[in-house]
Length: 267
Image 1 (cartoon, rainbow, N blue to C red):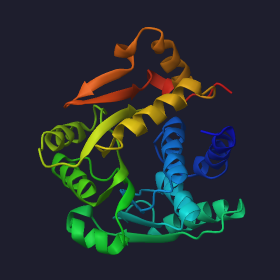
Image 2: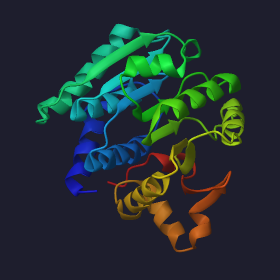
Image 3: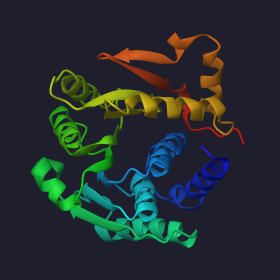
């Protein structure tokens, strides 16, 4: 990835995302923004979906991306802790931040106050307008709900789309892991896992999973900003078994640290 893209992504994190409440680490954001940059470079089009918007921390990244490519971002959430209007204001500010940087495109942002369990794939596709190139799942962490969300995402994702599943290995959210193994055991699924990054399991269509995996590996191998990248680079010296694992028949890149190394900056 060009260095100016990395600088722009870090600036967006510092100026916009850091002020929004939420839990995902900044390092994870930088990795996923790099994958969105890859989609941009390949001129891959598609809508964006987030299930579980909360305060809009991750949705802000997607709103920025929607502004870059004139895409449609849809967010599903009951908006119990943060109001829909409050979150919308944040997302519009994120889109406007990108426009101020010279982007001529405009984002379409739709927030829906509802539970994902009330939506079918066909109904969501009708709302989105086109297949998704990125889906972030961070709603209910109960097994049945996560399985439904994964099934929806797999049904509406484009062949080059990415699904990011939050809290895959969180011991306080074991329903996520249970649902994931149930989903990955399905013979009819279109998506395969390609990476585990700082708490999120990443999946994509079979034809593009290896490309995304290689992109992530190149990013963390050359990054000089984050402690988790330095840990990954040290592990590289010990061989591939320290970097890759097999998960339900797919080789995935494991990019994770211990404790606060997940989010610590080196500079």
